[in-house]
Image 1 (cartoon, rainbow, N blue to C red):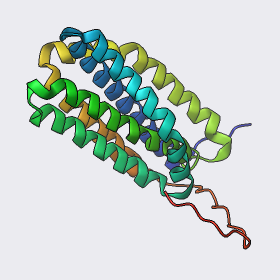
Image 2: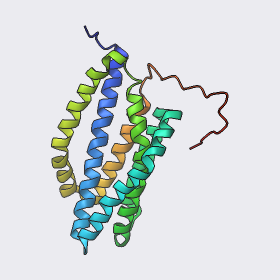
Image 3: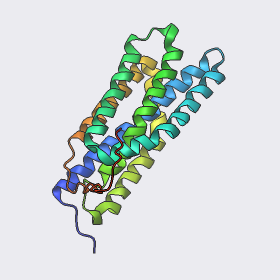
Image 4: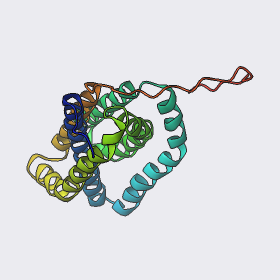
Length: 210
C-alpha cells in the first residue's frame, strides 16, 4: 500500500508542478511568437527552418555535457542559473534589440537557449528524484504528466491571445519573467534524498572537468 506524501513532499510537488507548467508555457509562447514573426518576413521559410534546425543541432552536441554537469553539480543551482539567464536573455531581446536586427537576434538567442536547455534538462530530471521519497515517484510523476498534458492543450491558445493583444515584445518579456519564476520555484525546493556521489577509484589518474 502506498503511503501518503508528507507535508514537505506535497509542497515540493506543488512547486515543481507549478515550475513545470510555467516553464512549458514559456517555451510554447517563445516558439509561437518567433515562428509567427519569422514566417511573416521575406524568405520566412528559410529563417524558420534555420531557427528550428539550429535548436536540434545544438541539443545533440551539448546534451552529453549537460548530463556530466548534472551528475557532478548542485542541481537546484544549475536549474536556477539556467532559468535566470534564459529569462534575462528573453527580456533583453524584447527591450533592447532593434527591429532591423530582430531576425538575427532571434536565431542567435534560440541557439543560446538551446545550449542552456541542454544543461537544465538533465539537472531537472535528477532533482526530481531528490524531492520525494522513492515510493512516491510514480504518484508525483502522474501529477506532472497531467499538468503537462493540460498545458500542451491550453498553451497554444494562451500564447496566441497574449501575442495578438499585447504584441511580440511583450510576449517575450512575459516569457522571460516566466523563466525567472520557474527557476525561483525550483530554487525553493527542499531536498530530501540527495544521491550519494560515486567515489573515485584510487587507481584513477585522469579527471574530467566541465
